Image 1: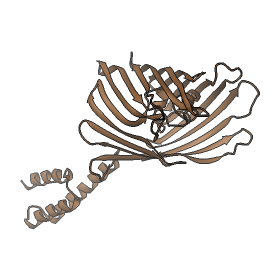
Image 2 (image 1 turned 30 degrees about the horizontal axis):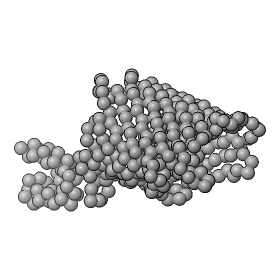
Image 3 (image 1 turned 180 degrees about the vertical axis):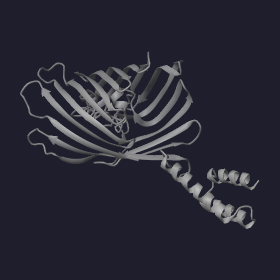
Image 4 (image 1 turned 90 degrees about the horizontal axis):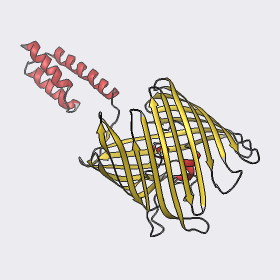
Length: 370
C-alpha cells in the first residue's frame, strides 16, 4: 500500500502546477504525518527537479506577465558588407533589431505589436486580428499589405539576405516612390481559406483597403488604396498566386496625387530538400511603368541545417527608357545553428545596361533571436 501511495504521490508532484514552495509544504506535511519518510520525500524532490529541468529545456516560448497572456519574441541581424563599388565603405551594421509581442485576448481576437529598434526606431506592426471562420477573418491596424509572396515572408525567415529588386521597388519598400514602409500600410483586410481537400485548403485569399501612405502616417489624401492576393494549392508542395494593388497616392517632387498601381504573379514549389520560387511584378507610378522578375532555387545539403541557393533577379525601372535594366546573379549559403540562430553568406554579381560599373557585393549576416 505504501509503495502504491508513493508512486501516486510522485506522479502528483511531478505534474503539479503549483509553485515549488507549495510542493515542499505538501511533502513536509506528509513527513510530519508519517505518510512518507524523509528519504522518500528527498527522492520525490529530486525526481520533480529533473522533470522540471526537462520541461524548461523543451519550452519554445515563454509567457510575459501582463493583463492578458502574451508571447514576447525578437531577433537581431548583424551584417558585414564587402562593397566593390568605388566610394562605398565596407563594414558592419545592425540591420534589424526587432521586438515582437503577440497575444490572444479572447478565443476570437489576437493582437500584435512589433517595433524595429535599429537605425531609426519605429513601430512596424500594430493590429488586431479577429478569427471568425476558416473562410472569413478580419485584420485591423498597421500590417503588411496582401501583395507579393516575398514581401509577406518575415525578414527573419528569408532564405536570401536581401529581397528582390522588383519587390524593393514596387511593394512599399526601400526603393518605392512612397519611401521605405517595410511593405506595410494602415487599413483593414479580410482573409481566409476554403475548399478543403485531403486536410489542406485549395485556395487562400486576402483583400483590404488602405491609406496608401505607409506606416505611422495619416492619409495624405481622400483616396483609399485597395490590395488583394489569392493563392491556390493544386497539388502538395505547389503554390500559384496573383496579387494586385490600386491606388492614388502622394509622391513626387513637389508631392502630389499620382496613380500607383501594381499587379503580380507568383510560383512556389517545394519537394523534400528542394525549393523553387519565382515572381513577376509590374507597376505604374504616374506615367512611369516599371517591371521585374526573379527566380530562386535552393537545396538543403543537410536537412534544416545547410542550404545552398541560387538567384536570378532582374528589374527595369522605366520601360520607356533604354539601357537602364539591372540584373543580379546571387549565390548564397545558409547555416542554421537552431531555430533562432543562423548565419547567411552571399555574393551578388551585378550587371547594368550602359557603362560598366564594378559594384559586385559580398555579404555575411548573422541572426540571433529569442
